[in-house]
Image (tube, rainbow, N blue to C red; front, side, top):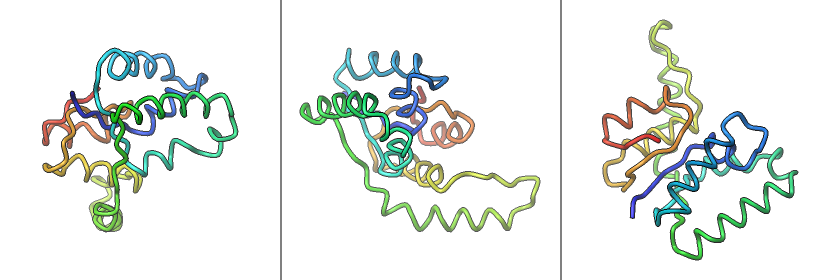
Length: 149
């Protein structure tokens, strides 16, 4: 069983039929979670971004999300990853970024910085990372041998 961490773009795409990545997200979910017994790792900040006001107002999306969530949880294939150990470093990095030469400024959200720090943690077992935002995570995944989907 592989452990697969996901970005909010994947979850949003999976449950929003109007999202540009919807069909690709569905294919990935079937391939990695319905056809195979992999574990889904969801960092808390990803949940905050994914279960937005827009998503929660759409009952159908929430029902489908709950169905998938319940299935994975009942099979012990769902883990919620606590971000607390990564928060302070991420906010410090955000502020330190403003001290860099403007030509090298990297405007990443706090959530993306937390996720990058999680992906950088060698003690976290993460085999794969699913994102549609390769530019913000490709370098850290490569450096820490996390395969990107």
